[in-house]
Image 1 (cartoon, rainbow, N blue to C red):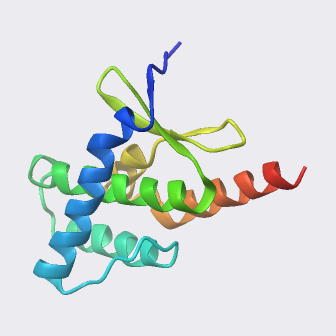
Image 2 (cartoon, rainbow, N blue to C red; image 1 turned 90 degrees about the vertical axis):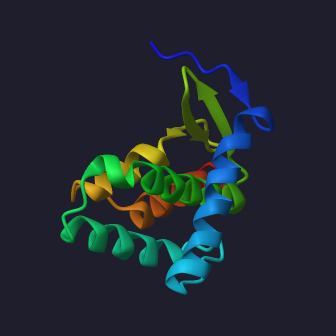
Amino acid sequence: MTTFHETRPSAATKPVRWAADAVLSMREGARVRLDYSAQSLWRVDRIIEGIRQEGAPYAAVESVLRAFGAYAGEVIVRQTGAEWWSGSGEHWIRTPDGRMWDPIDEARRCFRGDGSLRLLCRDAVTGAGAAKTT
């Protein structure tokens, strides 16, 4: 069983910085504007797909994927009031409905062709919204 040790703000320090790095590098390097909206995750999914199709080795893009995953996590945090959690060097978010999400791993899955940050956000936001209305 995984134990979650830290919650925001201390657990958020690294992922928030990684997300900000993604926003900055996309704006300055690729001229892509990421605005922490759920719609922007569609662009991120497409960027990851493009990197995958170029055949980039995982080791070369690992930190980029981590940044994109953290960015997706911040989108969910801002839309749902979720909190970052960390333990054993890993980072997750916990939505108000109590569910745990791993957007950083989802970015890795996107790179493997088996995930979507946009759909992860949709599921997390929908679940958190349902929990708020009950």
